[in-house]
Image (cartoon, rainbow, N blue to C red):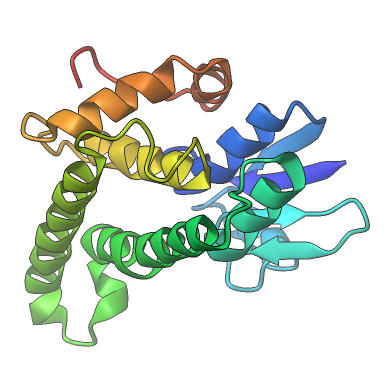
Length: 207
């Protein structure tokens, strides 16, 4: 059985959604950040101590969304067959992982991005501004589009994870009109609602 290691309101949400969409049997285990004993045990699975991690049926472990999301998508039919569409999907996943997720990490954990204790607030502000800019860029890309590429894909699940994270951090979404429509469209999917219920995450009304 596939086993996903996740953290609520983390970007592991994207892989969690794809697993639920697949209809396959899987196990989802929350990583105990903040609990040294649990983290020591988890680092035996993923030495970097980050989520997501996906343990395959044979025991092999995949890490990083740029590996896990294409793997799940190709295995369960959420990946474009056309080479150009596939390239667009990979481009988006790369952008999400290297730019959007990095900005979020800088915003939430600025101490990891500077050795100057006096510069932490400036690093955090820069991360926040970058994350807001990336959300606006995703909103622009979603204008007049139902999904980010030709059909529903891992890109949409990943983008949804960023939206949820932004709401969790108290960021205003009033100007993200297309993104909010996309969020509502995601919430129409049974798998998305099931995962949100499972991890105990709610999106406030109108957000």
